[in-house]
Length: 326
Image (cartoon, rainbow, N blue to C red; front, top):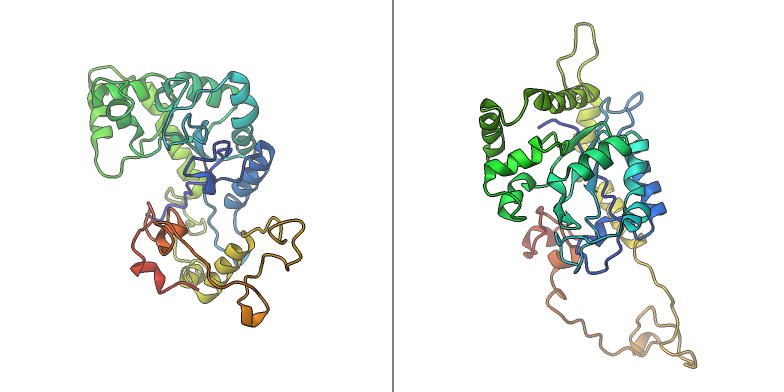
């Protein structure tokens, strides 16, 4: 689509070990998450220098808010939080991103204290816009407007879901629904009968246009350098480098660097045997005869690699990725 818009960084604070998206976060310390998140925002949105790609990308902080605190650990389960816990643990990373100038935000799938975030004027208008000072574009997570009817059961129909999300002063600007046009169709119908005021739509339209202008996606005036998405020499070089051997080597090294051995010692304190690692067979000075690796993911490269591997939900089939394994 030639749109330099990044759905990152994730600013959830990993407080529930059962939550399946812990691996996407910066950790369990709000200060660390805030510092890392702000740095990612600044890096993504920095305009390229001489000889670099002229475009800058728009960061999108997500998922606002407390998505990483599901009550039972399951993805999309509701969060039940005291005001103090919300303020001290889950808001600081988002405030740091706002202070860093983040251009867009994504609300979260779940409910907070029984209220779906996507339809919450208190969270998305009162807290995010008015108190935290966020002025950028706000997009829903996947199909969340429709989920007010289909999943949260807070709206009696898809049309009422749109009215609740947009007409209820939640400050949303865009619905992420790439598979159908129901959101825009229902929006037009609600506007035609006066249920949603045109001034409310103008506010969101202006935020969309401001983001496009900031990215250089609007038609440039005469005598202005080419738009960032044009095929400059730097752009061509970058595209040609995708999937290169140097990229694969760097990814491999990054994966190695994330493996942490907490204590390389014998199994017991009074054991005189050598440290646990490396595991060596007897003919190389070790005592290991066999190593049992068990479980449904033991021999599945797709499962071991996690979500977003080869496909957006990950893959259970290894055929498409095994050949590229280092």
